[in-house]
Length: 399
Image 1 (cartoon, rainbow, N blue to C red):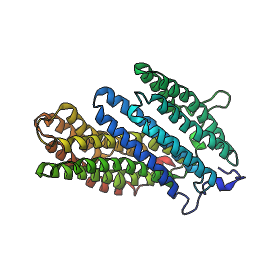
Image 2: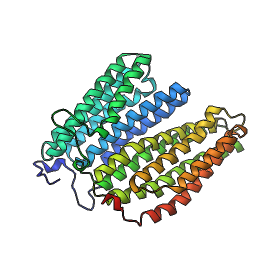
Image 3: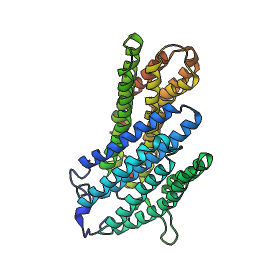
Image 4: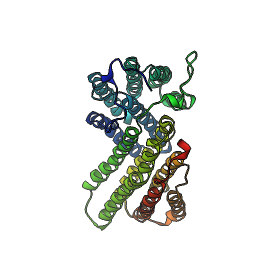
């Protein structure tokens, strides 16, 4: 976008060797979301029911949307600029209120969550509208459109916080629908129209790295749960084996993403003709599913470490197999979106997990988890070779 920046210090440099570098303040900002992801997994553990799962899924969608939109903003704005830093510090404070409200978001803390979430989204976007007015008018119009949609959804977030039970659930469901449908509609607003993919000038390497860092945040929750639970257990053969299986599961998820998915994504977005289109399609939605799979795996690790032997409850078996299945599926969807190639290792892994499900009733948590981790490790090794071949191809369909 060839716009003259009247206040260039507010904007991220483009085209330089380090223009996509993630700053320390961005990493500092992420700490709020480390805490938020921890709250999400603990909430599901404390309310391990279908309704609890629905609540956690909705809150995960909100947390991801708050982080994701901020990543887009910092893709344009310079985190070294003082006004931008003050904005990020302010978001951290509001985000801390939002995160502390997660366990009781569908209880007595609903209004705190609704107000803090709406303030987080609207405040950041309003600041960005002001900042982009100093040199990026096209992007400013895009952000005005986004601001209108976020104000609309914010009404439902706050209204839901004032209600209880099914009414809150319905109002927040409408708010999430507004939030998630808006990008596919180009944030259409009467009289000023809609945004197009060509309008979203993004720094591809920065977007790819930030998405990877969110995966690290989610994987960090697995490490925290694993370590905290194991620290309080008696050391015996079963608990030690369960600990090793949990650790290998987390390692294999890291391997699958960073040695396959992230490499492919970085290759294609950097070489894309319209990186904004690819960023919206691949990074905006699929990483929510990836994070969801990792949060579920942390819950599965908690159950495994607490009860490695004995009868396996159907709900626990579902989480033990469902978390790697969701993770493999979302990685495969991402790879398909960016490359239009079927991720054969991931598809094979999903078939293997399906076969395991047929025998899960006869297995202990430890044996079933170990088998699932073996599948993940096999996909990780195979996927590394798959990505090496795929990254040698020129992304023709992206221009």
